[in-house]
Structures are given as C-alpha cells and as structure tokens.
Amino acid sequence: MSAAHGEMGSEHSPAHAAHGDAGHHHAPYVPVFTGARKTELDELLTRYPTKMAALLPALWMIQEERGWVPSEGMAEVAEVLELTPAYVKGVVSFYTMYHQHPVAKHFIQVCTTSPCNVCGAEDVVNALLKHTGCEELGVQSPDGKYQVIEVECLGACGFNTPLMVNEKFIESVTVESVPALLASLG
Ligand code: FES
Image (cartoon, rainbow, N blue to C red):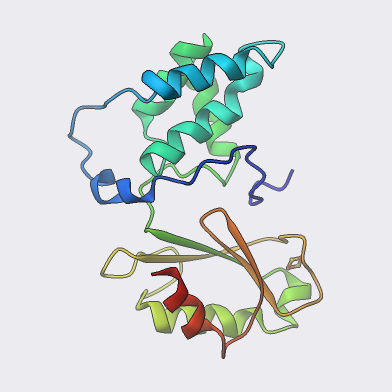
C-alpha cells in the first residue's frame, strides 16, 4: 500500500477540530482508548489473529482523535497491543500517513510524481502555496488552516492534478480551480 493512500479502513471523520490543542505539548496526555474508542478497539481485536495485526488501525484511531500521533499515543498503543514502544515508533515512522507532528486543519498532499508533473502538478502546488498563504512546502499557513506537501503517485495518473485533503481524495485539480477548492474546505 502506498503510504500516502487513504485506505485506513475507518469510517470515522478525523477529529481535526482537535488540532487547535495539538501544539500544547505540555498538556497531560489523555488516553484515547477509553469509552467508545476502547469498545471499538476491543471489537477490532476480535477480527485480527493477533494484537499486533491491529497496530495500523489502532494508530489510525489515535490520529483521528488527536490529529497526529504523539509519542504518548504510541506508548498507549504499545501498551494496549502488548508491543514495545520502539516497534510502534518504527511503524509510525515508516508510514507517511501517520503524522508525527501536529499538522494544519487541512493537510493537503499533492502528487508531483512525473506523470502528474507533466500535467501541471507543480503549477498547482505553487497555486496552493500562494492561495493558502503557506510560505513553503510543509509549513503551516499563519492561520493554521493549511499545510501543503508533495507526495508520490496517488493512483490517478494521466489527468489533471490529484491531491488529498486529509483523508479526502480530490482529482483533476487545476491552477484555476484551486481558489474554489480552498473555499470549499471552509
Ligand atoms: S503519478 Fe500522480 S497519481 Fe500517479
């Protein structure tokens, strides 16, 4: 699976509203796997042969709740799945779909691999940076709403630029359609 793909196996909307608190590194960590989330995890574990096999969706639950995967979240997952924190950290580091740092409310991943680049992806990236107010790739806009990064093939080659906003896939973006796209994000 491409690490950039959104096949997370979950129907939940990401809790990006939580991003406003994400930068408060010193706030006490509140466990994710309590109440409904604990129930969801327990149900999930019944469908996997081992606890380790539920690692990716468990990490995804952390990210849905917090907007990213803090080290305390990795530790919580390690504990509930009986894995070492180092192993969990290694998995989080491997998959770019997991954020190891707080990200903007609208995290925009643009495919700039060659087939998309010849269809204008670089121009779309520049338009996104301009209209979001992001200074450069990977840097959040001053209002914390946007962050743009380049990623590799999103599996929609040969058309105008495909991108993902959080977990939502959007295809055929052009320089001209960027302002309307951003406006639609709210
Ligand atoms: S190269 Fe861009 S989606 Fe495949």
